Length: 166
Image 1 (cartoon, rainbow, N blue to C red):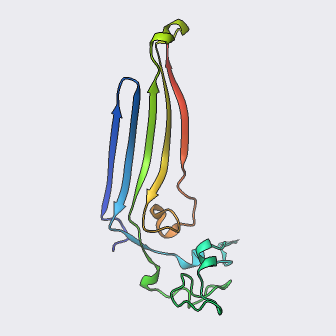
Image 2 (tube, rainbow, N blue to C red):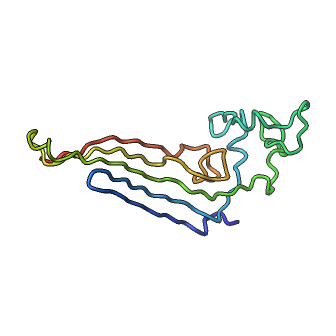
């Protein structure tokens, strides 16, 4: 599989009536892959002046004397980069395909009847969010971040608001 996605796609939707509306946008990529950057995830290793943390999958699934699993995710736990852990192989190759609900919004238009005595012509209440969830076979971090997945993650943002017209 290629490092750069061969397919990038998106689709939007919007439905509504006189009171309610809902909209959203799905985004994704397909036919892409990446190699996990082993030095960036080696636990306890001093990497660029700061020490790497220990990912839960490594803590739970590494080879050890009392767990001789030859298919453990992390071959050998160490505070240095071990040649045994960082052999270039398809073991570190991951599927980078995903689909994400990039944005969604739900709105409600208040009935105009009661608004006139308050001096308003319309009020629309809404809630929206970005990056609500993604679906991918890769579960360690956001697949859109690829090999640099231990960097700053994609943010999930929620907003609540009102649009008032006078």
